[in-house]
Length: 429
Ligand code: UD1
Ligand code: CA
Image (cartoon, rainbow, N blue to C red; front, side, top):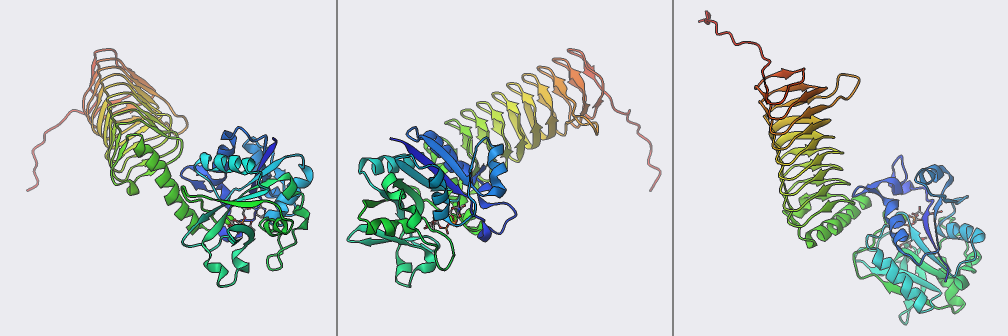
């Protein structure tokens, strides 16, 4: 059984009103088109997978390592499939997905595919019941049998009330797709609609069916507003999965978590936290309110925030404590480090159990280059110290508050670098 999957991604995104096509916009940290690409890669039964692109966006896909099929002219969803089929006609089934209608759960599609093949269906349409069907193609059933799909613009007032809609996902057999040339241009839009294949195949008595999605809704997006609505859905999907695995999220509706994060059970996330792609958090850590984490690793039993920022390529080991207004960038904090208030630590390695006082800044940029610092184990860095990179501070060193450190400090040494205090009698009355 040879199954070819295609993602239609050649549309002009006119209704999206953006300088870039809608499928490139991020949805919970991933370009929208990546959802269906990643999903199809998981389905082993698919023999070939191709993206359909217009000529303007070919580079985008090529840069990601794909060889898209060029749709030219861009003449509708039916046009896309028709042009593709003309050059690729040796498959038993064609699974059609849309780049602007991401599916979160790959099982929905693998079940749909299996059921279509098992029942020998010629066209299966993945549909769903929704309360506001505006914008979607409506399924017309006759005695519970699918006979046609009518697009929003072509619906009369009664048809507009139909709640059973087309998600845009089709499985089409070899027999059914061979009729693709019979699709005529829609008189209003002057485009070929793939949905018109249903009517054509129904008239030829082919075996049509619809499978109704009863899981997480599948939403297409045509406008920025619809993207925002979809973001809520995708956020709920991500956070529900994380909470089901044993992570406590207080007021989850205020927390934003992107795809590709790993958060172990026992972690607590307080309200208004942002966790972006690539973050890994080990068990029993607490992330307090208003913290912002990106592509970093945080060990177990840590306390992060409130108001902490951990930037990419940072590695925080276990039992770390970073408090309010602490920013960590591309640094390693070894087990037991404490940085409780108002600090910037960048391009630095901090050894075990060191304590970094309030207001400590690593000055890692000289205007041209990024330079790094090394702070050993068990160090004490007094408040409001500036550590000017590159510098090495040996283990168990002690830096007096308010120091500006420009030279290396040997193991166990005490360093102080601050003007002497003068007490002068105040003559002003
Ligand atoms: C489409 C369906 C509609 C369905 C909805 C689900 C048609 C005619 N309508 O409507 O029944 O309910 O999706 O979201 O199929 N595309 C191409 N080449 C083209 C035109 C479009 O590849 O020439 C791609 C677009 O990039 C997009 C997808 O096909 O990813 C759907 O196109 P769009 O114009 O958004 O269709 P809808 O009006 O949303
Ligand atoms: Ca759409």
